[in-house]
Length: 220
Image 1 (cartoon, rainbow, N blue to C red):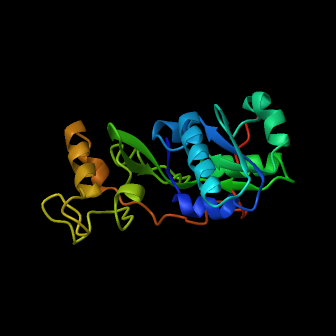
Image 2: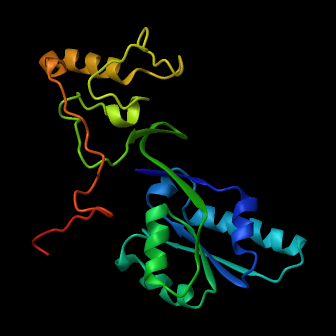
Image 3: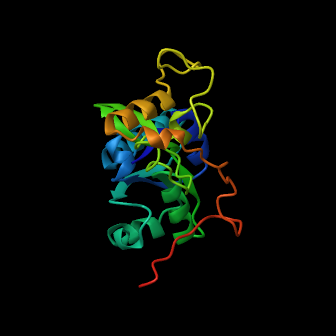
């Protein structure tokens, strides 16, 4: 899932205070799971902004709404009229959703209410941890399902490095060494031969043609 964190209220306020009509627009998928961007969060943020406007004696209308996903056209139907009539949109989606809304409504300012932080999982209620960087060249099949790109501080592809000790990373005793996790996993599966295989240097050019990456389903 995409994990995001709501920006400080003062930062959000500075983005929207010059407008008279703002839709606080929630996204009810990834960032709703981490309680940062769903309809409930949009309602709370809109209330905080209304109070802020009252204190500063500014007449700004804040309307809260939301849809299932801000990154797909099909979900916008129920909010189409509201967004078209808004002077500005404050999006509680990840950076993808913000850009999608901005492209869909080119004449409307669209502001991010969240900082997109990482791709992660839920390790305990209310605790999220990074597990993937979307690098486009997945090596999980060779590393026992543990990603050295997102979970190793040095992104070491042939590890461990010389700084780990007692299964912990040198950056903190609270951080597991990713390569110790990989070795333990490979050993448990009886696939330690994978550890002996050297990986080539990672190509960080992302897309060989340059620019943002894309993917097309040939059957569509």
